[in-house]
Image 1 (cartoon, helix red, strand yellow):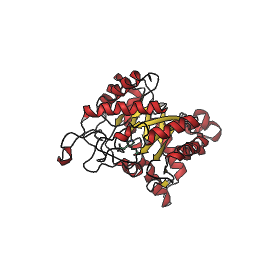
Image 2: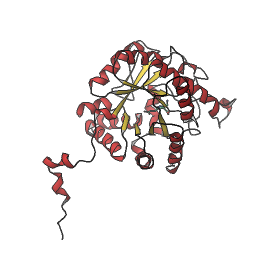
Image 3: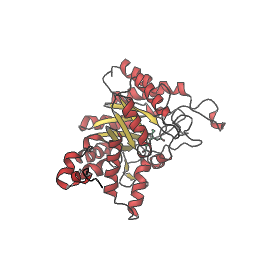
Image 4: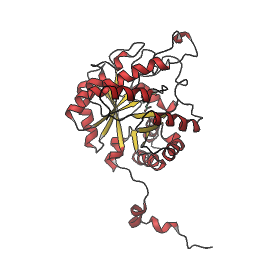
Length: 326
Ligand code: PBG
């Protein structure tokens, strides 16, 4: 037996960190924050232990808690005071996200990203305006082109409120180009766009839909979000967003889609983001609660693996927990 090669030589305590290939840093992480216009006190999110929906007047406090852990960026989600078929509260100047973002950017140093979508704002819970008569139709779908104009308005309203980056997430064809053009026209040509570029129609979003009250009232999202069976299609989707001016390319979810994270990393010379989604968070918490997994360890290992696969930044509900471990 030839043992000239002994990989174990580089696994002793003194040398492990010298040869380690991947490093997690709190500044790689983006913490999701939920702001709720329907409440005046914090409401725990049952399926996402440790997370809460906070009233607008506590948005600053909530973000300060994130910053205290060393995480420097947040992504803000809003629950509006009312919903309608178009999701008009998404672009209202006094909307929940607009008010929260104004306060947070005035009063903190956080880097503030906003999610640009309609599922929390429409009464039917879909990510855009429905095609005429779609409610009765089992093959209902979102009207792609009429949704575009509303995405543009929403993104511009977030920019006007002070957002540092906008993240369109509706999987509307042409969303990045439309948002980019709208921002440029409104004078925000330096504001970057992070596209939810390869966003799958995933069952791992369940807990988020409780958190943000954005579950579809009927049907599902398979006519606009990507089919989990498809990897090569992700390259085509992402290429379109790059052509349309996306600055950061996101893959979502993260852990079940690390092949896609890697493919995007290798095919495009742009920063890659991965969204470690609510279901990925909830399942580790559930197992830890039963005593079956060590929560801190699996949270850290999950994020490390997402980075190792090629992500530069990670949106994760574990942001604060893991940053504190680092
Ligand atoms: C769309 C949006 C969703 C998530 C982030 N942005 C919901 C969806 O697409 O159904 C899910 C995030 C998660 O599960 O953590 N506004």
